[in-house]
Length: 419
Ligand SMILES: [Zn+2]
Image (tube, rainbow, N blue to C red; front, side):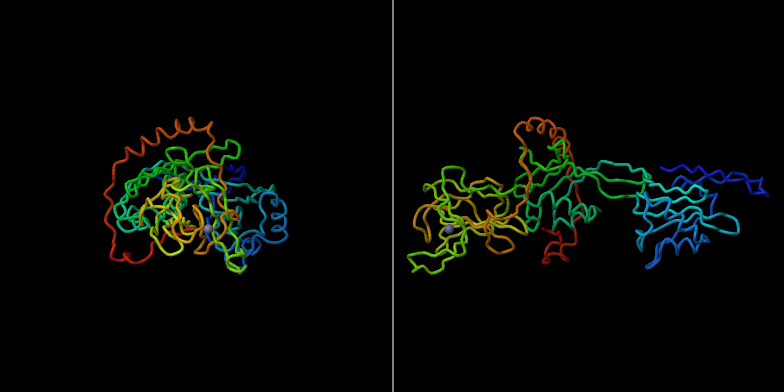
């Protein structure tokens, strides 16, 4: 915050004395604007600091002097076309610029004050008020439309989609799915909306399952927030290392150059990782998602394919039996079938296939999200932390958001951007 220290000589001679109510003093960026001629403008393409000041009757070498003396705070070469600025100029006939205010954004501005012989530059930040908000909604067509109908911006939709990117496939949300969020909105001067703050907690009710997400900072040094579910499991989860819990061995790795004796050493690429285990061993989905295929077909035998998000899917082959059907929502670690020998296989194993953008890749060589799960020692603290948030979420009354114009969007893919 800057406080103008300029002591101006009183030059006004003909003061008007008969004013019934004195004009309200309005301060902008710490300056009483009635003392100045105020010019609001936007930096045009190709316009430099010098060009702008010149326009308002400040000339070289004064411009150079200003640029040099403030360079530690503000590099005038970095002003950008399209940014708004304000000039406070003298009210007399010279209309000479005295103060230049460059607005980086709605909140931050740099103030260059050359009204005095001492030139000053400072950063001004408007005070921001954070207000906690609650919302609930019912999906009629897709999340974006529902958010629109609740007058929530796409920005918040993306944030939510990001939090749930590893838990929910937003293309698979269904009519009747419900959600509740606790989030923050920021306001400048109490009234001007300045964007969203934290999304503190959220819950989606999808296919009869309640999927909670709580923002929690586990790393007290790095202070990077992460989202966890009601059991402390991370939402932005890494894949499980194996679809089988224990007692397995990797009998064959992903290998595009595999040559097999039986086939006369011809190249027989293996686009999966084989986990050999006893018949009947449970097979888990390595990440949450929606079952997109569950059937028996040719060499695959009984298999299940799970779509996790717009990027990743996983597939599990040669099952003895399948426990899920197409369309089911499965959470990371859920059992989806049992190890068997169906299809083209020499022994009991699950062939685990990993799809990225529709192509099969080696899961062991993927750069996957690298978040650390919640430490066991932190879990009690976490559960304590989420208790009031859960109560608050559960207490939000279900909203009756208006039914959107579903006929418009019915057959158009949902416009939530996915990674
Ligand atoms: Zn295999």
